[in-house]
Length: 370
Image (cartoon, rainbow, N blue to C red; front, side, top):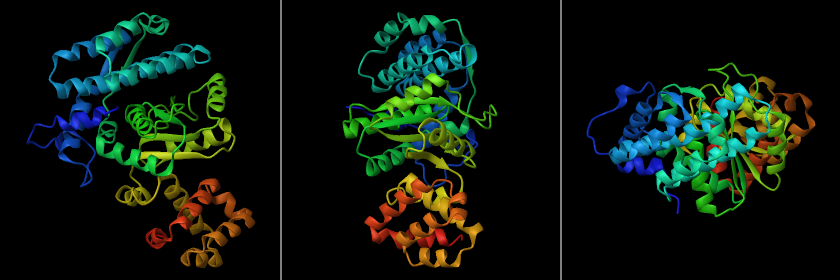
């Protein structure tokens, strides 16, 4: 049975002091003292410069640390194996088909470390024998400290995202995490989902994309990865995840790329641990009422509606007449051009219609800003 390392880390809370001074980002009332404690430890262990060999040594040497520090080092170190492989192939050999196997293998190593079902020494010893380790063992890479990533990777945020997933999905999933920040909490959420649903064909795959730190225009994946993702997505729901969304540019562009260029307009769900915009401030307090994908699609529609100023359409929304809203949208090319993602809007309306009791609350809240 999988138990989240972030949950375990929270259980090690043994301090009475406040750690807010060490973080740039406020937790507000949402996070517990345990989350703040965990974020502090994660933040402290984030900065790194070295090789994959240094990463593996650090993972083994963490055995001598107290349990809280050990968990922080292992949680970060596990996904640092993924980072090392992604960095190597993106920088040195971006079009090599072997990149897929290397990334999938690194994900398997990180899973084993998260699960703690085998001694860390055994996991590391076996990995050092692999061709994937030997290929990158002299490659130097870096990891910068990241207050936001440490903050929004903690247990409370990931727990709510996980609960949202199991409320809205009960099938095999392809979980695409935006690297680097989305990998550490994303793998945890993915493993929680698999443990709960017992779905055996779920796949976790990270894609490197950063519009702020690297000025990426599109995710850094090659044509072989696109073919792989298209193939592996068959028969699965697709989830795109990032740990935070400040302004939403990265997640929006990644979503657009996956929908149009990879999955050719197949539905892609969105999951975010924290979004600083108004729509997800409400979302963060109402996670058990509405899913991420449904909420964002309705919000996108209403944001678009501000520009359209269609009084008939507005009246239908105010009257909760969502079926006719969809018909109006289908008939209006002007409206369709302004809606970021119509498929998710349709899904959202269908979901809401299944439970009329929450419709009034959602519409009233959202129309307050229209």
